[in-house]
Length: 163
Image (cartoon, rainbow, N blue to C red; front, side, top):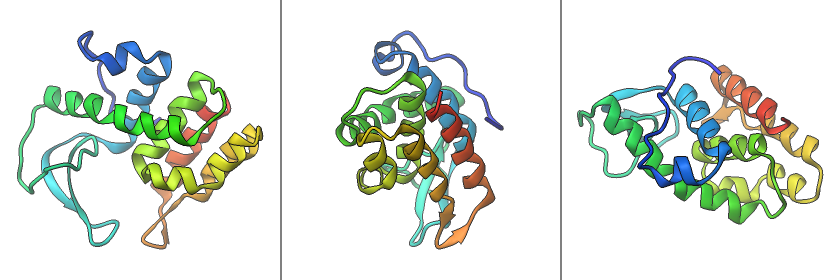
């Protein structure tokens, strides 16, 4: 993983402490790849673009909104259960903590619909874990263009998926 690190989740967050080891791993992975931005901004990487703040929070964000690092951490912890539900809906086989954390990071980045329709989910559900984890490397484009940062993120997710 690269970049930003995040402190351990607070004991009051049910997701981080009630979901298992995978949740703690996913929080660290996602925070490192999303990066921390305390001021809302318009992300144009995926037209028509979307307002974003903190560790990739997108709901109700206005350009210029300001948050503390603690508020951003709480937003991430509050956003993740929705994405975790998507992973659990799409992946119908038992997963290791590493696989679950990797797929949660992937889903947070691309969305639940993309996971459910992906070769990643299809292969993992068919019992082909290695092929499914390898398929993460197919998702390295934004706006039709290769993005080195996405390749690096997928490499981290793949490694974790296989653990």
